[in-house]
Length: 494
Image 1: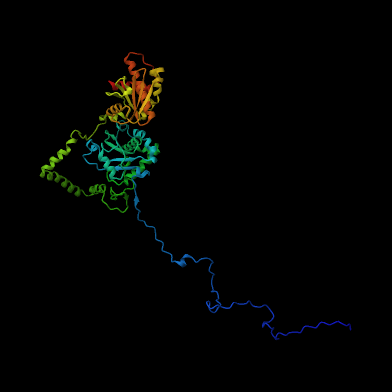
Image 2 (image 1 turned 90 degrees about the vertical axis):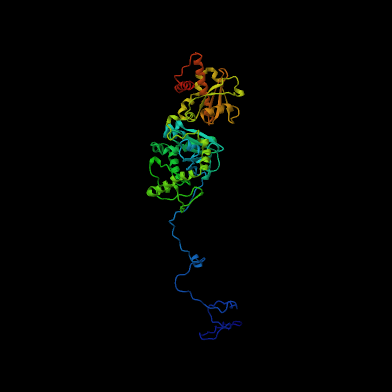
């Protein structure tokens, strides 16, 4: 044997039932070490999952934290609606005045005690600007007879101003549009005179529309009027004030059931649950119960008897009624009895005589011709204003100049004479021809139309002056509207 060689010893065999290792475990994977339980957690116990589907991760649903409230069914009871009379919405631009006192100026002149009110609103400016054409198509006679009366401080029609305050309309200048032939009137409210006139004319359209058979066709041909008229009818049905309603073309009121209650006139909020009695409903109920009407008639007959017992009350009533004696109410006003103010709205010529001549008009004739612009029937005449001046003055037409008076201070005497003659308070423009030493007046709310009216009036005066002097008149065959107006002015002067 070689020296230094040591054979390997075989490893001893260990049986399954042999001794454990020093660490106390058998061969194989060791179990994980468990942390000792703390005193706060207590003894550790193993919990088994409950049978069934696992709960989803995340926060618990709200139904677990708080019981769900029962869902209330939608109420079928109508909710109260609120009406704002001074708002700029379309519905708030139309209202109704009813129940004017018998001592009011309008009632004493034969007009009814109720009428529509239109507040200026930018949303209805289109139909307001078209009010003159609409009124002419509805009733030509109403368009010819209409007169506008501006009352900026509520002195001419104080009862109308108080009625406006009663329905919640702010204190603004008002304009009353009158049509004596049809005994209709309307009110326009706006701070600007032009807008006020348009609103008053539009309210008169509402007043006469219910009696015009052509209203339905006009609503179709003019969509702005059809939309406004439908809105106005609906607004008047829900109006705060009680009084007669004017259904379109004589038809029944849409959506109005017999015996329905409307809100009180003084409350700014309309409630669907209001049970306040309405005079219009009482009138309907009186038709069903004639016995109540008979009792009311008996009570009315007893009133004069009570007045006779107190003679001093009769004397007091007579003293109060004395100022109204000069005004005789006319039950029926024929169309031929239109006032000068009503005629002026059709652009009829007016001859003015100025006693106190303004300084800038010194040396010119005291008598002059005035013309009111604003009627679309005279559009052809106003469009030919420059041609009329050229035809009558020739080259001298270039020397004609215009002077404005927006504040009624420069030509105050002329404005007063025009207002007295026509009954309308409008801005004026004076056209002067220095070579012919003639002048004329144009009136209206728009400066362009007012200037054209002044030129037409001046050209008419030149033509009439040349005819009086025996001079040869120019050929006016190409200006038929102007030639017809010259004859009309000559007839008005005679």
